[in-house]
Image (tube, rainbow, N blue to C red; front, top):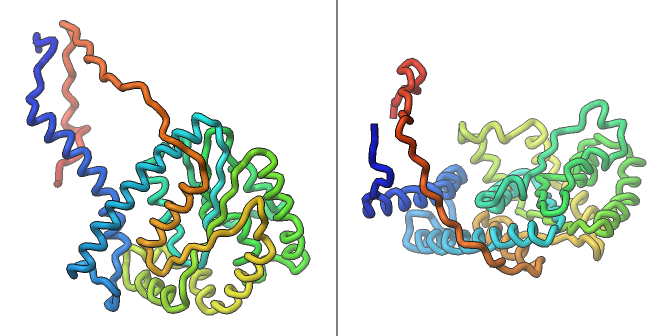
Length: 309
């Protein structure tokens, strides 16, 4: 039985533990960078070059700074009961998912959540088109990031023939009014289009094909979208023209360089709000209660996960 009611922690060991925890947090971003590695030659700044290392160091410094600002924005959204919706649209492999990951990485998932809806089922196809998106809209003090959105009708559904010409035209009649309704209800709607070149998408698709860990990202629909590049371009141009309204304008992110695209998108997002860092009550970690007759029970060996590593 441990009779020491207030054990003195070794200061150096405590500091090492805190440092390990911080390093583990930073490693999450490094792991995602490894996941996003470019398996093909021809990068402008190879990561192992001096210029590449300098750029990566600057990228991480700026990313961590911007993520700290996102935490301040999150606190402000909660404190002022804001309702925020951010749409991410773009071609397949344009980098929407990577940007969303970096935005949400350090945020509270109860405040900032991602909505990535699958294709509509038979029942949903009979509903009002916007109906299945409405249930994902935020309450006060929440942020919702849509990884693709109701603009599917203006893009993939139009190009692939999943909607009729009448449904397509009705969408463009309805979407400005729908988004004005959101604005009048107090929802702040921000719309991003991630823009990449024909050549860059080609390289990223080849990267997915040759990376077994990424092949799941390529669906038959993605491959067909590659063939119909020009049709998607026309659909995108019409979409931007017909749904760019003062209450919810489109913002185009140049996304050929993934890292710069993430930084630019986050920086722009932060500048859309008059947020400020809020004063916080100092957090004091209470001492753990210790009771004389308490003893921790051993876990049966058969319940333990083997320590292979």
